[in-house]
Structure formats: C-alpha cells, structure tokens
Amino acid sequence: MRRQTGTFLLATSFSEKKKKVATRAAVILPWERSAHGQDVRAAEARLEEAVGLTASIGLVIVRKDVLLLRSRRSATLLGKGQVDSLRIAVKADQVDVVVVDAKLSPAQQRNLETECGCKVIDRTGLILDIFGARAATKEGTLQVELAHLEYQRSRLVRLWTHLERQRGGFGFLGGPGETQIEADRRMIGDRIVRLKKDLEQVRRTRGLHRQARKRVPFPVVALVGYTNAGKSTLFNALTGATVYAQDQLFATLDPTMRAIDLPSGRRVILSDTVGFISDLPTELIAAFRATLEEVAEADIILHVRDVAHPDSASQKKDVLGVLEGMAKDDMLEQDWPERIIEVLNKVDLLGGPEAIPQTEDTIAISAITGEGLETLLARIDARITQGMETVRYCLPLADGAASAWLYQHGEVVARKDKDEQTDITVRLSTEDRARFERQFSHIQPMIA
Image (cartoon, helix red, strand yellow):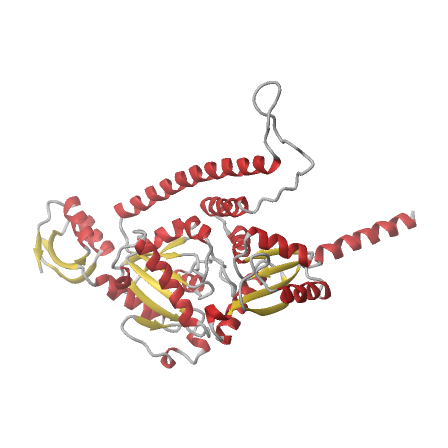
C-alpha cells in the first residue's frame, strides 16, 4: 500500500512538473541587406518587436538572432549555412518552436521544420495565434477563425497517403473519389462560407447599433496607434473603465466604447481599437474591418504614439499607412488628416510634457501619471466646437425639456432669464440643431 502511494505521488509530481514546463522558443529575423541596407538599429527594433509578440503568448525565448540574407532561397528562405547553424542551435538550446519573423511559403515552412526537427511558425501564424488568444467578442472570435482557416487552407499537408480515396464517387461502382487533402480543403471552404455569412449578420447588427447612436448622436473619438502605444491605458484613464491594459503587444483586440464628459459638459463616445503593426497579415486587415469601421465613423481620431520608443517615427509611418490604405479603399473619408490629433504618450519616461516639442496638432501626455490629460480633453472640446453653429433660442419658462435638451447636446454660452421666457445662446452641430428644431418645432431660432 505504501509502495502504491509512493508510485501515485511520484506520478502526480511528474505530472505537475510536466505542466509547469514552458515552451522554449527561438526568434529569428531574416534581414535583407538589399531591402533594408545596413540599418542595424531598425533590425534590432524589429527583432525586439518579434520577441515581444512571441512572449505575449507565453513562450519562453531562449535564443534570438538577426540573420542577414544575401538573397532569398525558395526552399528555406535562409541560406544553407544559416539553416545548418539554426539546426545545431535548436538542438543545443532544446528549442520547441522556431518563430521566423517573415512570411514563409508553405514549402519553406515544411522544409525548415524538417531541417530543425521542431515546429516552425512565421510572422503571420504568430499574430494569428495572438489574436486567437485575445479576441473576446463574438465578432472578434469569428474574424480570427476566418483568418486562421484562410491561412491554413494553403498549408494543408498530405498526411493520408495510405488512403487512395476518402470518399467514393458517383454510382455504386465508385470512381476516382476524393483524397483526404481534397476533403480537408472542401471542409475548410464550407466553414469559410459559413463564417462569412455569420460575420455579415454580426456586421449588420453593428450597423444597426451605429445608426441608433446617430439618432441620439454624440461625437465619436477613436483611439488609434501602434500596438503597445498605451491606447487602453489612456482609455481607462479618461473613462474610469477597466479595459485590459498591459505592457505587451496586442493587449486589446476588440473595440470598446464608453461615454465621457468634456470640460464644456458635452458628452462624447470614446472608442478603443486594436493596435496596428508593421507587415500586418492581409488576412487580418480584412478580418478586423469592424474595428476600422469605428475609426471611419469617428469625428476625431486620436493617434496615440509611444514617443519614448526608439522606433517611434517608423511606427507613426505604419499607422498612417494603414489609414491611407483605408482612404484608398473608400473606408475612410479623404479629409481624415484634418480629424487627427497626435497624442505623444509616455512622456513620463522622457522628463514630462515640457521636454517634448508640441504643435497645434500634437499634445504630450502620460496616461500613467495623468500629466496632460486635462489639456487633451480641452483640445478635444475645442476641436469639436470648430464648425458648430451658434444659435439663440427664446424658450418658454415652463419648457424645461427644451432647455435640458440644449444643455445635454450643446454648449450653452449665454443665458438670460426673463419674466416669461429664457434667452439661451448655444453652440450646436448642424445635425443637433436640425434635431432640436424638428423636436421642438414651436421654438423659433434667431442667429446669434
């Protein structure tokens, strides 16, 4: 009995130990001299980004290297000597998975796995895994599954060579039949069609919600920026929400919206969105269209930048490139640059807002310490006020509903109470003025 107990404890201890063993990863960045020149700093920044992506899904990085490429090999991408060195390093460091920060063809991925004797994933596969782990809403999970299937469809491997056919052909005598790989492709294709239908339904529902917001319109302010720039931290600081925010890439994937009150008393909707990243897989640009739609509907776009990051300028270029692409695809109005306020975040790491040069279109803040947030809210307030009409209304004293409506939807700049009426001068957007005069048609406006 004692022996059995000891055996059980040993098995349990081994099982617990096995659970705690982390997956060991090597991160490899193939760097083409012809494409990038000798920019060592850019290579190091890109490698650290790849390391951050890998660590964000719980892998333990035991090796990271930049491999300079003279040319791309069709079989393995890397040179023969580099592949040999990688195989030796994988064995020495007991690596379980090699992350190649580049886009690999299906053949290159299989050949590298054969050479290294372990799993190999490329940048697209890595980002898909992260998105799969983080997506929370129904639409997010559907979009991630769709992107996964489209990615996997080109990477099906014929593992069923012992089966001549998976399914018979027409008639009783059969026929050429259907091989396993063909069956897999068909099932993936069927699932993709189904997912697209489900996504379209979810998007229609989201569109109805957006139309409902327009009927009770509040200006929308969307946060965009490179991943890990501090968007969710800023969102929480401004709204008091508890959106997941960590010092990691892609901490937030699904769009989140909250109402906030500006210094003037005007209410706006703040929307947090997914972070952009360089070389975002094309499958995911399409998959996360809903997040981009929230940006397209925004009255103001806050471009949040990690100004303390050594590669901040390149990150800015990547974000603006995505927005320009949206404008070319008619997903974003051509006047989008006029709606942007550049928010230079993490200034606490550089000595405070005073240490950062600012312009009319930029503002320095720290979402962590709260420095500059009041100024940011005032800047948003002023930007929304631009283009608003100043109107004077004479309201009956008994008409408290009209007065309350104006205070809720506009900015009251003057008020004078008389014996039987109240003169109110208010700033309203064109849409709000039309709604007010339609709802309270008995009140005559006078241009102030």
